[in-house]
Length: 210
Image 1: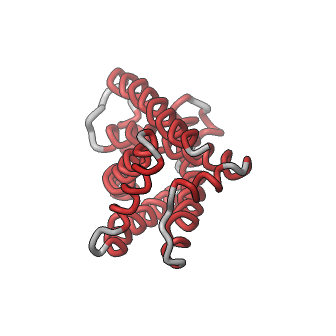
Image 2: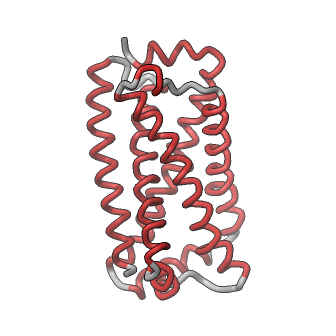
Image 3: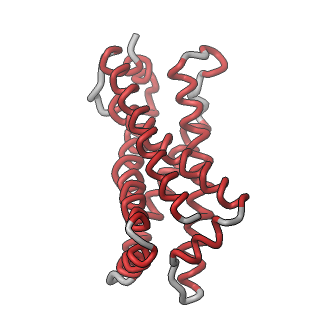
């Protein structure tokens, strides 16, 4: 039996899951990739990173843009995720199958990623904005020189990469793109490859600051 057939029995969770998947892919997932791209300027030089950061934070109505297209979608996605967890739809303890374990790690990585994004956003964007400063290479480097912060960022990046990649698998199933077992196995392999690529990308950026 395919995941689609079993998932379709959720009844009232049908629209909740679709809203959850679309919010995770378009605003939140797109922001993750854009954020990694922006931080990739560090591969060029610290000066290039600082210039690009200044460009982004100097955009017209940047605060409104961030609230509408970053913070609100992330909050919505988090609330929907908590609602799904509250419904108790994970069946790891009952079945122990690979896909149920992936469901469990999807929720766990989502929680870790949420904590990471909250702390990261406050310390690098909100705090500096309120102080009238800009996040620079030197400021980020000073933070990451502390082992505790470095490993916190490492775990957060890996969790965010997994949550996005495995969420893409669920997105394809939820929206009827992969409907059969063979297609779902193929997409599982591809999305896990994507997790490795994005995770490596994010960790490589992290090491450039130290």
